[in-house]
Structures are given as structure tokens and as C-alpha cells.
Image (cartoon, rainbow, N blue to C red; front, top):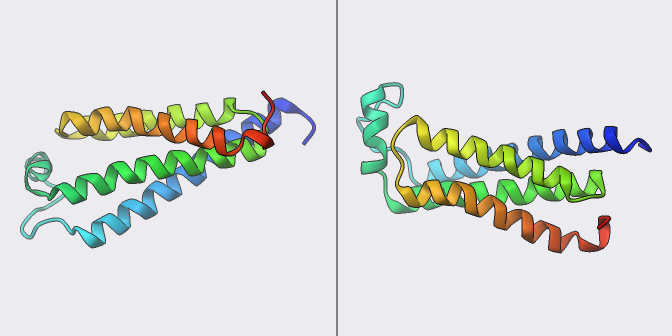
Length: 137
């Protein structure tokens, strides 16, 4: 791919796919470790509103860890393909948007809303440092 625009688009698409796969896999592992409490119907809006009150702290931490590693993986893939940091920042913006969307679907603790923004940003800064020798300034 010699065209930098095409390379950038492919980098963003691949980064988003990689990032969301990692988030999905890690959140699934978190759900296996911390299954939803008995008696909750996750298709019932009232039960969804209660969910954050009844799940353990570990389940919440598992979700924000998934956001971090999803952004890290997505950023690394985007930088590997795009050869620049910009595609990674676009991937991160999309992961942040998805995290904020999730936190608005039903009440989340404020620290999770903050983590939905801060952790992907930190992950991308880490990815940029890790990929420093492979990307253009």
C-alpha cells in the first residue's frame, strides 16, 4: 500500500476490529469470572439499572481493564499498518465513544465514566511509546 490515505483507512479499520475483539474477549472472560447475579434478567431495563449496584467491584474493574487492553491492541495494530500515530488516535476516539455510550445506557459509577476516557488515552500513549521505532513522527 503506497497510498497513505488508503493505508490510514485500512489501519483504522483493522485497529477498530482488533480493539473491539480484544474488548469483547476480555469482557467475556470477566463475565465468566464474575457472572451476573442470579435472578437478574439483562433484557429487563429495570434489572439493567440495578446491575451496577449488585455486581462486585471486580466485575467493574474487569470491564475497564478490557477497555484499556482493547485500546492498546487497536492502537498497536493501527500504528503497525498506518506507520503513523494518527490512525491509533482515531481508533482510540472510537473506543472512547463506545465506552461512553455503554456507560450512558444504564447508570455506571462516575469512576467508570472517567476510566472510559482516561484508560484508552493512556493505552494509546503506551502503544505510541512501544511503537516509537516503527512509526513516522
